[in-house]
Amino acid sequence: MDTTTIVIVLAAIVTISIVVIVLSQMREKARIERARKVTAQEDAYNRAQRLLSEIPGQYLTADLKLLLIKRMEEACSKLAALKANLPVKKWQESTLQIKNQILEKQDSRPPVKIDSPEKSSYVKELLQNLFKMIEGMHKSGRIDAGTAKKNLKYVLFLVHKTHADLHVFQARDYVRQNQIRKAIHAYHLASTEMGKSRDNPLAMKAVKSFRTRIKELEALSNEGQDTASAESQSKLDREWDTFLHDDEWKKKADYDD
Image (cartoon, rainbow, N blue to C red):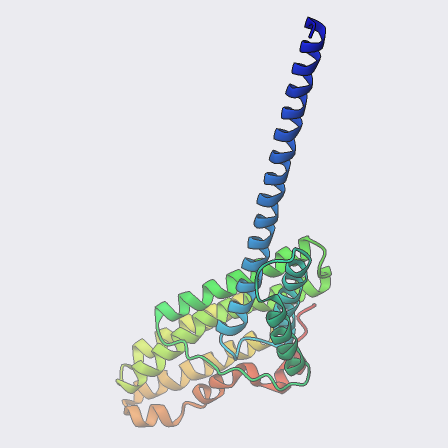
């Protein structure tokens, strides 16, 4: 074999080796990218499912539920296209079942009492994650600007209500302990929180109710009446428990304004 032939053979071997290495690297990159996409969509599904199951039932409107369902459906579709080794079919069936229940107004979720700073902080974290999810859906073009604005404004209102819920719970406890001045202060804090959503008629209704309650308690404090009398006049406390289920006020609320 002459020198030229040897050189050609060696060059061919080197070229083939380089091609094999490049193809191997491309396959590995494709595998890693696919795994990354699968993980991202699995995380997206789990986050939306967690928000749907853990945000207090009284906070979730049908619109918010359907946005979460939409995110879960999108994640499942992408996972199916990626042929992920996950129970995607089962997830899709479960998601469709919940969606039908929501559309048929048969999806009832239990309310959660916000009775500790820890619980208030946890619910706030869930709502902030929901806010980010809606923002992401808007930025990626999966929902329009009107839908995003309406729901983002409502979620922000819920964050304020979470803090107000805690203050109302504390106020009730102070009333039971006959610590009326502390109860008045707690209602002031609740009013301040709801006042942050001035463009929401539900929030303004709450502020008005808190002011009425504060006047009631101030009168009781000045007259030296006891706890039983204070509790008997607490119409606000009874209304607050069903605040987000007040259909008449919901009909009046226009979050697009």
